[in-house]
Amino acid sequence: MVLLESQIKLKAGDQAPDFDLIGIDDKKHSLNTYKDFDALLVIFICNHCPYVKAKVEAIKEIHEKFKDRVALVGINSNDPTNYPDDSFENMKKVAMEKGIKFDYLVDDSQEIAKKYGAICTPDPFLFDKERKLLFHGRIDNAMNPEDTATEKTMIVNIEKLLAGEKIEKDFDPSIGCSIKWKKN
Image 1 (cartoon, rainbow, N blue to C red):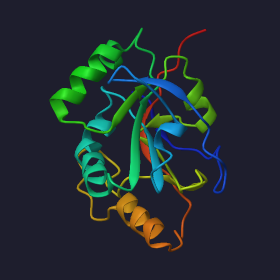
Image 2: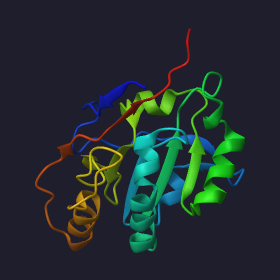
Image 3: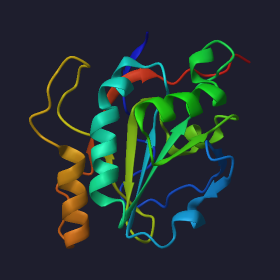
Image 4: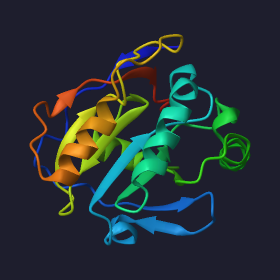
């Protein structure tokens, strides 16, 4: 397991890169799919990473709390060749087992992760109604899988966004396993 901290590629105010990816619902999803939402939260996740597993309930809480106003999209960019736990079929299985109700998409080419500058799982990006980046970073302050969160960073930031308030910090790095890139 290679542990990485998220890095800045997209800067605050940058436009969300578009995507056209298949979800576990077997439908194509793009930025336009979420045009009627006040905000978009894109989180690069996978099935096998202990850091993602530790955040599943927190991510589900965010989705449940804001599902009428904030589109939450999980994107798995891991190479399933060497990580079969992250295959599309296993994405469907894990979503069913964990009760995941947000869109969970597969980035087979890994191009979307590269466009966003995602390097770890989880790696969250919060965009406003115009799909401009407001916050890139942690879900909460529990930085290790065994830690208990005392601050719900993403929930606080989404509440500020929806209330029209400024998010003080536009980058607060997440930490997790490296995205498993394909070998050339």
